[in-house]
Structures are given as structure tokens and as C-alpha cells.
Image (cartoon, rainbow, N blue to C red):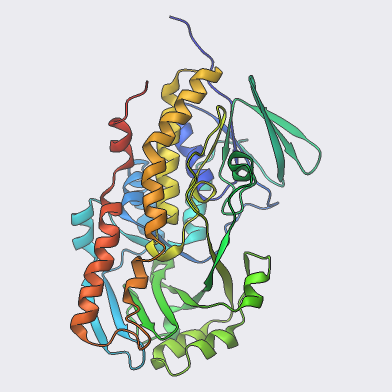
Length: 406
């Protein structure tokens, strides 16, 4: 039997998807070099949801204890009326969801998850201050070019470089554009002791005229992460920065007349980030014979399902398995592995991506006056859970096992 050398793998981007891919490849006996443009390894942002479909994978990686130390497993999701704070409906989570979906639902600070993954990088596998400016693929591999004039070669290139992915532009041929949705997400953190009316083990949603406020406990319950989804004017949509400091006085104005707890929350936020919510259509392919995409680079999605991190984690574990099982670094081996990866992941992520446009937390809008009657909000909550339950039950590794290598 002919032995083939293990492929040299380059990952562009050291976010959650890129780091999970490096860890998954290491577990499979492969090595990857991660290239990150930032001079210091740190993750921006605030809170994130690690849904059961993502947490199951990280538990299998042996991270259960570490996740329990830094994350929160919310006990309930509570919907409150936008103007007076009346509880409209309350959905139990905690043990109930863990039993139903086969894994816990965590809320956590993005930097905490990023740190757990970064600690597991093999020594020497991360190159910081390396901004990839382009790549060239040939029959023998891929050459990466960096802003400092250096180059590197690999057998496989994984673009994990986010929503504005340079690698995606090369794979898609520059045909897909980011389309503004007319809304933005303002995200920030507040110390939990400044919000005594809220339980540090619960998530909360207020949905009313022109906006939504969603909160989740992070940092072991010491902080509350909030996301305010509000309209964005035309001038803001034209600004090129994807993420920038938010103008909190404008956020406070958007929630004027709402439940005092919402107003207190905005007032307590010393700073927040402004993310313009923009959308792309799903791609019909992610790969060339030696290059592929992962996470937001492959399927940037609106945040209404809370699935960005979990989908990237699913991508990473499937891609690592496909490359490990491919048999070597020959062009046909790599091409077959990337084709299998697409076959398992592309249609699923497209369905999640498209579903995030008009479902999830948007179900709780209830029209211009926000959700009013208790029974109406209860029905909306059932629809919200139905929107995501099939996603949370999905087991990416089982789906891969059902798609044998050619």
C-alpha cells in the first residue's frame, strides 16, 4: 500500500472557527499553521450563544469542565412586554433543554471561548501580524502572500477570515455583495450588580415598536451581555466600518418610553459596539481543489438564530475529519476531501443562514406595538423554539458518518 504524506494545512483567521479547526485537525493527527492579521491574539465582541449542537462537540473535545467554569447555562428565557416589563411568557431551559437536545445551551463571553481554544494550539502553530493579501493556487498547492512581503506554501488553504473574507472573494469570484438590512446590532456588557431586577441565570427579551432588546448572562453570571436590534439610517449604512463604537445616546433614544429596566440597562452600559447587519446569499460552492471556506467566511448569517459560533464549530470538526480521512496531500485527495465537506455542510448551513433572515428572535416582534397578549407571545415563543430546535438537534459528526468517503 502506498503511503502518502500528510497535507500541510494553512488557516487564515484565528477566530473561533479557525482555532476550532486547528484543534480538530490536531486531534486527528494533522498539523495546521494559523495566520492571523492582528498583532495580539484576542477576540473582539461581547456575548455569544453556544447552542447544544456546538457544545456537544466541545464536550467531546474534553472541554466540558472548562466551559462550565466560564459560561452560564441559562435556566429560562423570559419575554417581557416592551413598555411595562410585564412577563408575557417564560420558557424553561437548563436541564430541560440539555435533556431535549443532548447538550447544554451556554451563554458566554466570546473572549472566554476564544481563550479556551487558543490554549490548545500546538506550540509554533500561530503566526500573528500576518495579514493575508492574496493567494495563488496551482496543481501542487497554494501560495499565500502577506502584507509584510512574506509568502508561505501549503497543500490546503482554509479561509476562516470572517464576514469580509478575502479568501471568499477569490472562491466566489467577487460576485456576492453584502446587502444592508436596514438594521444594526448594538452589543455591550453591563455588570450584573447594576441590574438588580434581573436574575443572573436567565435570558430576557423585550420586543416592541422599532426594536428588540435581548440579554444573556456571561462571565459566570457576573456580567450581562445585551444586544439591541434597532433601525439604522442611510448614513450609517454607508459607513464602511463593519464594527465601530456605538452612540449610546441614539440607542437610549430608540428605547425611550420602554420598560424602565431596558432604559437602566442602556444607561449602565459605559460603551458598546455598533454592528451593521448585512446579509449575503448562500454560495453554491465553497471550494476549489485546494481551497475552502469555514464559518462566517462560508456562510455569514444574521444573528437572529444565535448560531454563528456553533455553525463554525460544526464546520471545523467535519472539515478536519474529511482531511484526515482523505489519505494524503495529492491534489485528488484534497479535492475529494473538500467535496465531501461541502456535501455534508453546504445545504445545511444554507438552510440555517436563510432561516436567520426572518425567524428566530424576530418572531417576538408582534407588530408596531410589540407583543401584547400573553397567549400571542406564547405562540410566538413556540414558533421561535421550533425555528431552532432542528438546528440544535443536528449532530454534524453523525451527518458526516452518513456520508462515507468516496
